[in-house]
Image 1 (cartoon, rainbow over the protein chains, first blue to last red):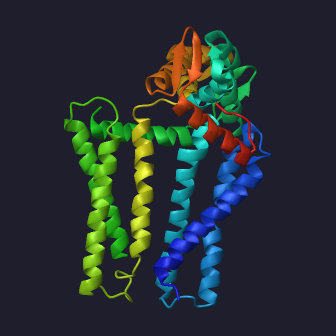
Image 2: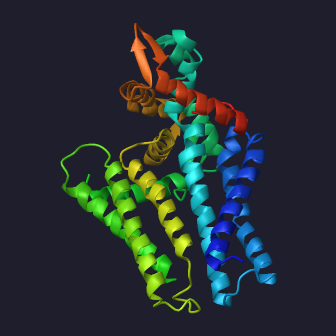
Image 3: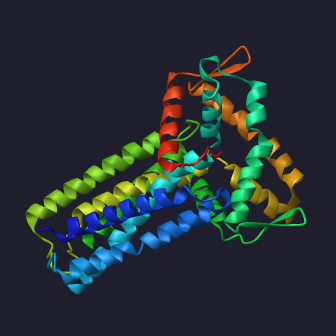
Length: 176
Length: 171
């Protein structure tokens, strides 16, 4: 028999595994410009999964706790899944997909043991390539728009500005 | 909910300790290692308190306050560590995407050429290449960039990820 603690943790982790499967299946066919939106949709969809699992556990009375206990288990399982998704996106998928350093490592790796010259590296990856990839992603995620060759920010309530606000707050607190 | 509140309070304590340390230290650069050590220390404190309470039997497990989310709270605490670290690292780094957004938002609207100019000014590629050389992942020899053993390991991990994710290189 499980305890409510083990059940909550288990549901949170299982839901995250479902997210990973969902993500691995869908990400293969997602165009770069739809990447952020697809990832967000994937997270939102699987965040409902803990509710399904908690409901099943509640119906079959897997553990004996009060109704408030079941509600807390649901909220905490969703929190665990959300935090695991955050960890995956920021620490694993993000660097793979968007890191300049990782892209450079891969370009240099193509040169094998001989390496790659500065000119060759610049031809393969340069500021223009970097801007093109990012503009594509930012337009796809609905953060910016392009009208007659002019780029505009649609809303300042996007993930980058939210992160920036939190980062600025921490910067102020640490005084650097 | 006692365990959740306790874990969150101890996490706030570890963040506060880190902030106080950062304000007073003369060391330059990121103080991530100090935060990780502090967070682990406070996590051990959490473990100690949980262990003691379990043996004392003070909390009523059937009340809302005493709901036994001991492992869950400890796990949430661990997950909060990389979350804080990612925000903390952001204070020292500027991502190209953020730079583009800030540049556009600052002027109201920008052309593609202006955006490229703004990115060129920041020298994202050159500075990252320098970082890779300094961290020992890449060697710069006679105008050629060559991966070191550490760099090759990273490249292998990235190749493996490409196999799993089925996506081409980003950047």
